[in-house]
Length: 260
Image (cartoon, rainbow, N blue to C red; front, top):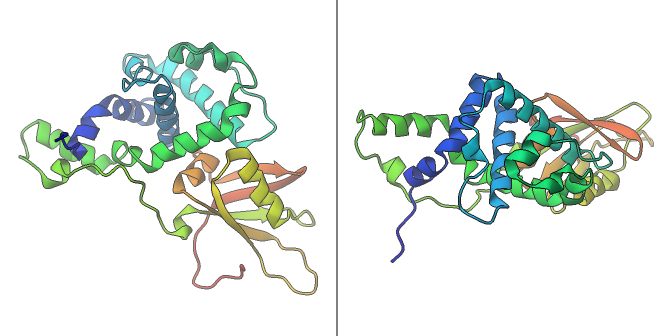
């Protein structure tokens, strides 16, 4: 019978990733959401190597803070490129060297693979990274390592790799339009479907009367991770659809809704 993988096993396995996350937040002053997205992206690159070893992540603990600052700048540019459909891939000399993958130097690498990359990173954010970025679990693990606590049922629990679906409100974004420049529901849906693939559930629009144009709407994604990747540390994120700018921010549910 195969050994059962426990929560503690997963925390140990991703200790390097956790260490990088803590350095990005503590030493580099990164927004936690930016740090989470960056580490998940690095883990995705590691997964493309075809081995279980975290070859990229394992090189980072000894990296200087200055070098980490450069790396996070490159990773942020990559995430921005993944969201903006018409942007060429950014130069990523440090990331390319760490991954030992010269394909990243080509400006079409990220645009061509954006759906594959985003869905892979989203799977990590919704899956194993829920443990990697759990401050309470790592605090518990460190108390266990130092002998302050004994065997703990939470750490010894079997790790369930299945992604837990969260309520729609938690994976939704509020979208607003410039006055006189609304974007059609189908165009918003199509933008994300064509850019990231199977990532979106539906788009709701403001109910209007008398032929008035809607001023806002709601985008519901299949996963909370897509919201994280859109915002990447900011309160509002702009995108252009058909030459028209729309703004997306985290959806905060109200007691009553005027969307259909």
